[in-house]
Amino acid sequence: HTCVAVIWYSDDGGETFKKGAELPGACEAGLQEMSDGRLLILANDGSARDKGPCPGDTLAHAFSTTGGATFSEWKCDPALINADSQAGLLVVNGTIVVSNPGVNPVTCPPCSLNMRVHASSDGGEHFGLVQEFASGGKVWTGAGNNGTAGGYSSLTTLAGTTALGLAWETSGPGSTCVGSRCRVVFSTFGLPE
Image 1 (cartoon, helix red, strand yellow):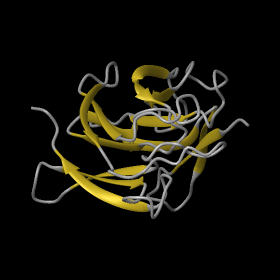
Image 2 (cartoon, rainbow, N blue to C red):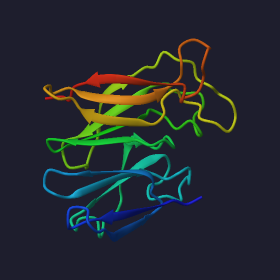
Image 3 (cartoon, rainbow, N blue to C red):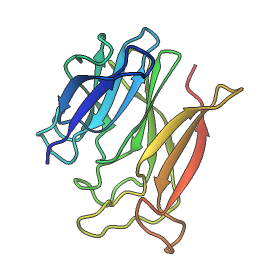
Image 4 (cartoon, rainbow, N blue to C red):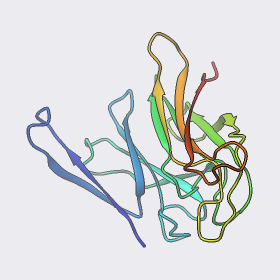
């Protein structure tokens, strides 16, 4: 299947909206505003395998200088694995932070169970690993389903601190619950100086 992300934007504080860019191949997308006013979109390809914006198993990201009416060409960084799961996206003081499972469960079962956080301080040109979180849960390796213990994730700032928060789906402890959607864990971490 092919996904299409559609951007809707408002110039009047949300009174009315205009249809902006349509981005074929973009599934489960996240959108953030950069400190310079550009918009950043991050998306997976919905299991398209080489039919999405990035070859192989890589998340795609692009920028808009027109408030979402148009976007740049997709950028692909091999550090950002397309795990067929909604990735968390946050921009903090100009640094782009992305959370997603460490492997693609379709092409590599049963591999890493962990959730990873990457960051880019150069405007999305390169992403480096910040931290890897282990769930301690059991991986479900059944055919046709998510074989990784990391699932969807969301990132947030934490008031009164420089730490960031990560809410992420994972498997349960022991064998009571298997698969990536058994429980949600909240982890905290900091960005490198």
